[in-house]
Amino acid sequence: MDETQLLRTCRKLFLRGHVLEVHIGIHDFEQGAPQRMRFDVDLYVPYAHSNPARDRIEDIVDYDFIRSIVRQRTVAGHINLQETLCDHIADDLLLHPHVQAVRVATAKLDVYPDCEAVGVEVFRLRNAQTAH
Image (cartoon, rainbow, N blue to C red; front, side, top):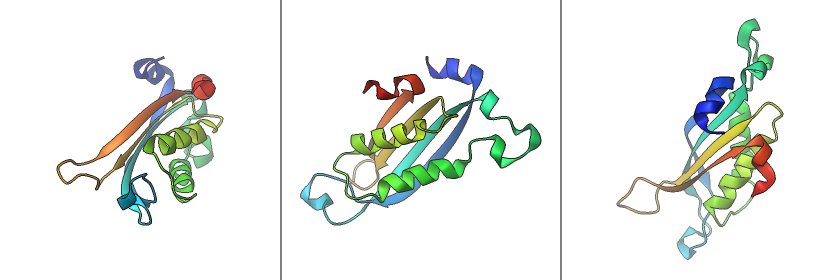
């Protein structure tokens, strides 16, 4: 299932440009000091589980949930690889019973002086969560 198919049945929620200081990296210069990282997340929630007709927070997936998962993973201790962090965040987001799919992108913002960022992105569907 691709994004176009998901958008026919799901509402897309997103978090863009969420910047945190994270202890991450395998190189000597990355040890002991946090690095700025940007997180961009898309959640796909079926319309049946995202109905704001009553205009109440409990009728949708709250954006605080996304920020909370990212925060929990980034403060859990040093992480060697962005790929590991990105996969763990995606897996944790898919644990929510109303999330059908996720796209998670992480980016280190200060690694190279001649580029904006280096990063990784994953896209996962609920039923494919354990396939990696």
